[in-house]
Length: 461
Image 1 (tube, rainbow, N blue to C red):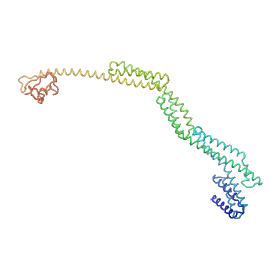
Image 2: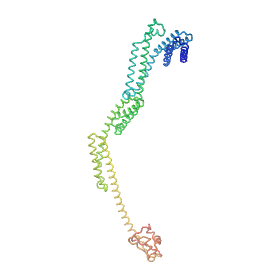
Image 3: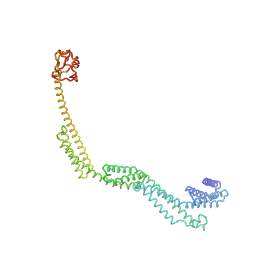
Image 4: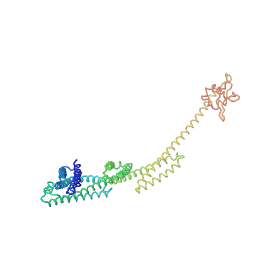
């Protein structure tokens, strides 16, 4: 509302200029006062600065009210007073305003510093500090040349002793305001540079995450090499610090993260070196012991290796070569290669032992088959003897009824069977009649598909 009034007053002044060009309307003074008031209003003044602003607005309003009365001298004086009060109000605003700017800068600078802008965005970071230092220097000049209490009182109360004194004080006021304006500009530039530095630094977050991921990968390798067994406390501490650094990066604390990444890198490399050296030593010992046991196993079972003997011998040679390579690499502190060849030895030994087991199984199976064959032959012989004996006991007398004849099973190739016997001319001349023979001889034929040479079979009529 007050701004609207000021613009309306300026319009009235312009109308007076157009229709009353011969009279000295104080347009310049009115415009200057209005501009100074608007400048102060835009700063959102509080407290005493606000009180002075209200007085300046009232004076400008009074100046406009004098225009219709053509009391231009009074209007001019009030416009000048309004201008001086607005400028003095601006001076009253500046200390708190600059302090707020300074705090804003410090917050931005702190964020940029935490984000490691000193390294990641050095140019903007240094520019920010430079602008801040220049602002501080300007504030130092203001402190040395500030208005004295009595001078401030004269501006506020408009009670100068002379025109010369007034001009000196107002000149000093403008000089101080110019310095404040310059300091304000420097702080704004410092804030802008700090903001750019901060935002630039954040573009490196993913790179920091990748560095941490790489370190974590090496740490996990150290754990695979039993780091927790060799250095349990240090391993636990590093695990905790990895989580902390991850959080620092996530929260844009890149400066702290950068420092901790370097420390982590050294600690993890140290843990990795320790773990892999001890792990490779243990693997080499395991490979040596296993190869020795496997070699003994080969010697112990060399007589039963059979067709696997040649392959096992080749594998023993390969295992020996891998073991020698592992020993050489360990002596050269080439631990990764030591582990690789030690594991190759263990793998080869595993294959050899599997082949020995297979050979043992095959050998035992062959023994079992031979034993089974022997037993079957013995059983078959016994059954044949029993059948012959039984046949002799059961051989029928010529007086038995319904018996056509007694047929003695012969040893032929192919072997005789009920089908072939029934097909003989002297028997039935029909192989399909074999069941008659089977039915008549069930007492000695348990399986119609199995008869033995020497058996005496009754042939029904």
